[in-house]
Amino acid sequence: MTAGPIYKRILLKLSGEALAGGSALSIDTRVLDQMTSDLQSVVDLGVQIAIVMGGGNIFRGLSEKAKSMSRVAADHMGMLATTINAVALGDAIKRSGMASSVLTAIEMNQIAEPFTQRKALSDLEAGKVVIFAAGTGNPFFTTDTAAALRGVEIEADILLKGTRVDGIYTADPEKDSSAVFLSHISYDDVINKNLRVMDQTAFALCRENQLAVHVFNMEIPGNLLRVMQGEAIGSVVGGNND
Image (tube, rainbow, N blue to C red; front, side, top):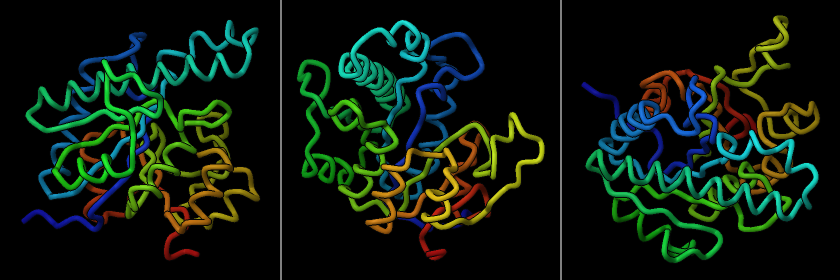
């Protein structure tokens, strides 16, 4: 018998690099298919899912050239990259038989609807997977901060950050073999120890609004469902630990 979900509404933060997988492609359709399968297993439990997309798979390769640009122009390009990813994921979700909507922080009505809290909540209640694009709509703010902001706005039970590592470590485990895994940690410790899982503005917003953050490896098929069923996977920041 399948265990029921421990959350009813989640905000899932996905990096743009997650859509590229291990290939050189900006978007790997095989990754999209696996991602939609994972989302389907959670939707089938009756969970409301909102997603904030990053854009690194498209914009990261241009970042060196963007250094000569103004920060505002570069950030606007990054917002457009997140929209490309959001449209791709939204289409994959619809092709799999689920309902989805893409809401953008910057108006581009021929591509997607503009974000409002009311629209987001209405679509979630209707059973749609809601994908937020274009970050916060403002330069100088990351998609991590956008995830924290949208999570608070939709009153999500948890902010899930899907990564390619098992959780939070005292150092980058891909670079430091002595890095220690941390299954639970407070908001203050993350900020004070400068653990670069999300930017400090995002963590400060989560702390202020008591929105717990669960970091886990999204690249392992089925992990999202396991997290929703309460298995001890990944690392948790805040919540009952604070």
